[in-house]
Length: 149
View 1: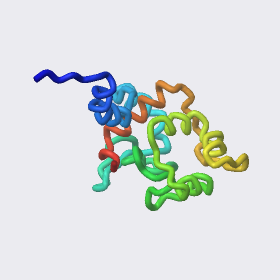
View 2 (view 1 turned 45 degrees about the vertical axis):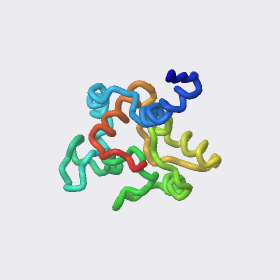
View 3 (view 1 turned 90 degrees about the vertical axis):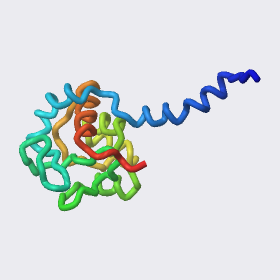
View 4 (view 1 turned 135 degrees about the horizontal axis):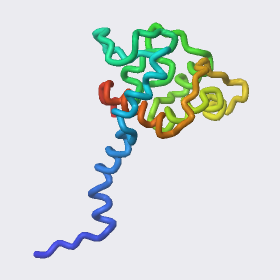
């Protein structure tokens, strides 16, 4: 008995693998570790046990451990800005593309996502180079648990 697979059948069989890969960071975590030096002035990556995995214990910004897949504005014991809290209330969860857009211009990102020209981000630092932002996201993801499906 011969089996024939059409292109459509093969695509359906391969679709779950592609979907999983799409969630994987596209940046270079090793390069992101170097760029993260710019972020550690305000941020830290510390696990549930309090072990600092990256950064220097800075608390101006929230802990970035577990950022991929986290609902915006939900890291405990951090005082987020009103616009970021509103984004979280909308059910927004962080992914690579949104992270890249956010760090390029936080206020512009919030204004566009919330369709509100009055929305403002508290983060003043910008990371405008897409490659740097993708690398930092990959680095943060490499230190974080896998996001919930």
